[in-house]
Amino acid sequence: MVGANAPAGEGWSSRTAFVLAAVGSAVGLGNLVRFPAEAGANGGGAFVIFYVFCVLLIGLPMLLSETLVGRHGKASAIESVKRVARESGASPLWSIAAAVGMVAAFLVLTYYSVLAGWIVYYIGVFGIDLGNAVGSGTLASGALAGQTVEEVQSILPGLQADSTTMLTMHGVFMAITILVVARGVTSGIEKVAVWLMPSFFLLLFAITVYGAFTGAFSAALEFLFSFDPSRLLDPSVQLSALGQALFSLSLGSALMITYGAYASRDINLAKTSAQIASADTSVAIIAGLAIFPIMFAAMTPAMLGGVLDGTEKVQGGLGLLFVSLPVAFQTMPAGSIIGFLFFIMVFFAALTSSVALLEASVSYAKDRFGQPRWILTLLLGGLAFAIGAWASFSFNSQADFHPLDLLIFSGQPVFGILDELTAKIMLPVSALLLAIFVGWVADRQLIDTENGLDGAMHRTWLFLVRFLCPIVISAILLFGLFPKLLG
Ligand code: PHE
Image: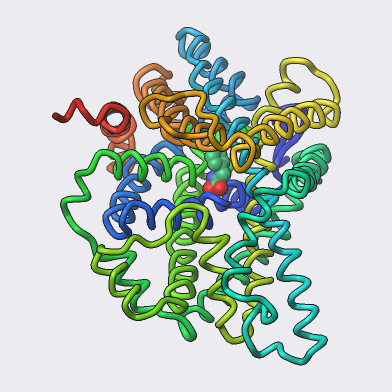
């Protein structure tokens, strides 16, 4: 039976369900918010190229390593690594690799839900606007017709200044996440993935086609794929790209180990990993090809020229999705519909990721404390809500509170620290330890029977996991955190 001997009898009901759930966990705000924001902030092309390199040479081999440890261990991430370590005659302390990842996933969830709360709010803004457009028969024209550009630009700052609304939206999103996870793997997480992911792909396809026909498509292509080669060697661009690749593929976060544990023995993990990595990377790039043409369409030719020749910075960061894009929707044909569908699409992606982020620690708590799933889900989700609420004050009352003024954290409020700490330190550290564990420590035969590879593919994978992943991740971590080492 599929899913037999999975943790506490839970498991995916088919291979398709596993792939959809794993793709659902990978595709999220990382692809739709973080990727374009990082690409914008790091100068476009150089970041994108280094990113693809990280996915192929680090992300893909790590994805297979994590899912195979989970599938062999058949338990929560920490327990799975312990089991593989024990069977390999190694120290169970290797499970620290998964523990770092699990804590990272939990911390990502705290601020992820705040951001997803903004998405919920924007669905409301565009939903009301769509209603008005239907009422007034102006569906074919731009969105938010009654508002000036300044008013649209102030939607995000207005929301950020209003803690009550922000916390309500964050609470709504977290509550939905808790409801899904509390229902369990098959009837909660899997159901949501099976329904939402295909809808997500349809929406993404429609919006990209729309952007290609109505937006500045060729400018977007140029921005995303042409680059200044010297920036390829910039350690901060490299650290950003590595962090983004791990973040986007949900690696180094105990998550793929957790999902792998619910996969049945007859699934070919190598093939599945390749599908997950290619789906996730395609979504990031396609999302860029949907978002940038729309955004560039709203720019004056002079501004756009400046962005493309590097003299003007495109709005990186969160402003890209929450400020520039709504302004663009104002002037786009059928802007209300497209704006509404756009934020629904982002919501679908965010939910299938947030359930995975919560499940990583819920599955551990179940293994460890044996309490009913719904109680643990409620407790952990509640705690994540509280920490997220604190992080949300970074946008108003605690904007000037910088509790960790060093390295990449200097000048960052709590929200930024959570993001940088997880993406640029904890995920790489967890991935690094797991690469060493799978490549050097775990029993060879155990690994070889799980990974579904043979011949040259197997040798390549082993080489990447043993040498390239640990060396490259360590180097990027070191030079990204201490750029002065390079002189
Ligand atoms: N991969 C998901 C995204 O891109 C979320 C995630 C981030 C999951 C980090 C795990 C770790 O949005």
